[in-house]
Image (tube, helix red, strand yellow):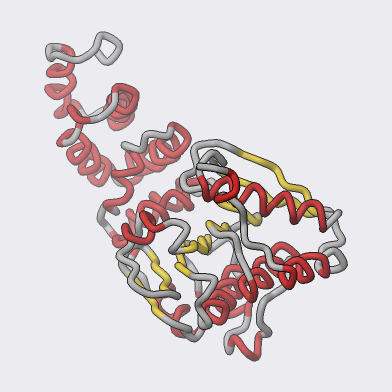
Length: 320
């Protein structure tokens, strides 16, 4: 696609906003550009970040190609924009980069301390927006407030529904702003922070999405993930997806959680292996090898016939 079609829309008014932030973002600050930039959205984000860097001296942009899909502008530690923001959304983006809360506590109606005390289970929230939506900035400001109050408990993805239509379609997005948590909870419009907090606080751990579980693992709390399942007395379905995840670091974190299960709740570990065995033949060889390792971790002799069937079956030699 020609470059003339791949350029971010930065109006003169937006450029003035960006230039004004050189005085608000005065400490060394890093923004991460995640994912490949060969796609149209990736190129738009790259050009956008280049303009930011050129006009805000304290800001640096580090590119991390990785395997992120879709591309995103990540503001450490917990906010990613899958968007090239404009207007009021641009101002919210820059406030986030600057580490400034988008709304005051009295407007939010809930204190930062209360949010930190009540949120016990992490969550990954996706909020779909549009630059032409008059309500989106108000909705995003409330989610950014919560994410800023409890960064270790919430990961926030702000997604331009028009820029990433396939992602929006996968979440059945029909209007903006719409926020999605665990693929189950949905909010459309501008929602009070207190209502969001009530829902997030009362979630059933058994219904956590693979995305939320992945965040728990990425935060280095595999033991905490195992304890969630032990306390509820059941496996979280998304945990099984992580055991079969194509990326090794994610799979490794799930395997560490399995080791805790094998030690503290072998019955649950056995259930996990039963479920993984049902999909064993369809897994990649690398994943098959890791599942075999988990059989050894649990060391349940009743499962030996399954291992013997691998040795005697039509599997690749490294697996045998």
